[in-house]
Amino acid sequence: MAANKKIILTAEGLKKLEEELELLKGEKRSEIAEKIKVARSYGDLSENSEYDDAKNEQAILEARIADIEATLKNAEILDESEINNDKVHVGSIVKVLNINLNREMTMKIVGSNESDPKKLFISDESPVGLGLLGKTIGDVAEIETPRGSVGYKVLDITR
Image (tube, rainbow, N blue to C red; front, side, top):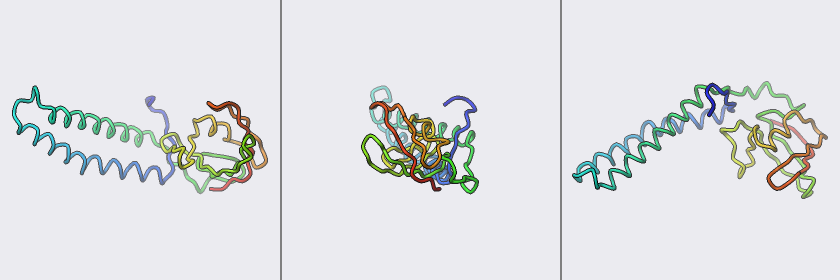
């Protein structure tokens, strides 16, 4: 993550990150500390795979904690009450028609930290998210995706 890059989060996204951070700093740190303690009791650390595994797990955990803390430090919380439904913004729920497939879909435009394509939470930095930002009902966005150019017609915007 670039230093001091503002990260846009919804209130829901902020809450999830704060809950994950609390879990990692509390319960997960304790679990790993216990694994390290048990592995140390096995003696010689130079050939102790349990100790190496626990230390590796600890490093991954601490990296995730640092990443979440950096995200929270640079977070800009989206005030969803200020979003109007005239245009697509981060936080908008957008109903679109995929013109290529003649299929309607509803997606939510979110900050990159909250994206989850399986849930149709689309990052504002992705080709589709970028292509839809600023569009109004009736607009068609031609978006270059990894699978080629796709046309999306905006049918409805809510929050």
